[in-house]
Amino acid sequence: MELFQKRAANLLTVKSIVTVVLTAVFAYLAVTGNVTTDQFLTVFTVVIAFYFGTQAEKHAQER
Image 1 (spheres, rainbow, N blue to C red):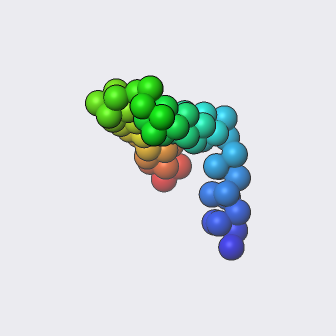
Image 2: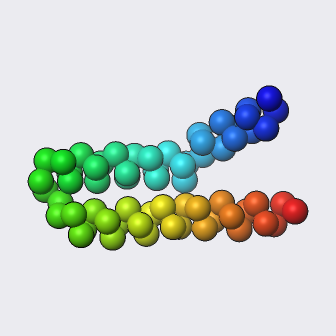
Image 3: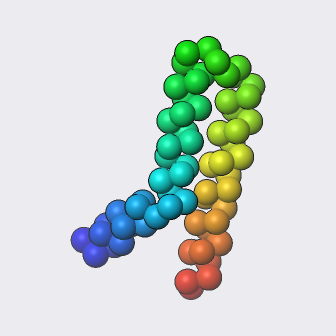
């Protein structure tokens, strides 16, 4: 239960909020046709790779 609470708290960090909002905005733009699929995939891949890369690095430092 404590691990769940810690992970839930981590979702409220600025980096996580920015990642979720950016993903939602680009998804909306892609659905409305304002962004091409290639543009969406490029931006989404960079954001997700950065997010998970920094999470993995932070996790590795904690060990």
